[in-house]
Length: 137
Image 1 (cartoon, rainbow, N blue to C red):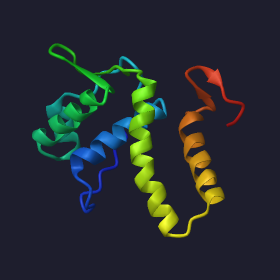
Image 2 (cartoon, helix red, strand yellow):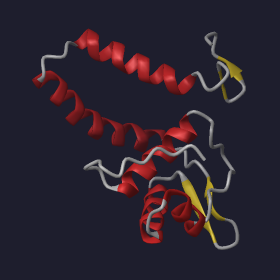
Image 3 (cartoon, rainbow, N blue to C red):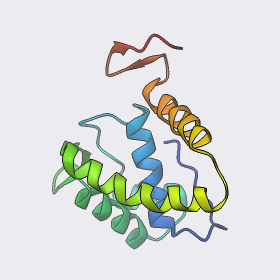
Image 4 (cartoon, rainbow, N blue to C red):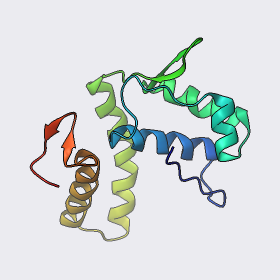
């Protein structure tokens, strides 16, 4: 697996793990139906407490990224609720944009940054997303 956890960061490890898994899903490194490593395997791989992994998996379940199955463990199962996702993003972006405005970041710079980040996730590894050619790559 491809995880980057910064043990010196102020951000909680379970949040970093959650974010890394979401980024893996966005870039198709982790796909719908994939089974994540067991809590024990993930904890051993990263070198963290099993409770931390369990918390990350629970948050991912609550957010609709995985389903927890007794036999298979944490399985990527995207709960596509676009309206709720937009509302959630709006709340997160509200603070980020306010911060940027306070730091004198222009509207054009913000748009450029959003486009750059969006392109990073929609290009996939080989210029495709969900089997569709993006025209880039």
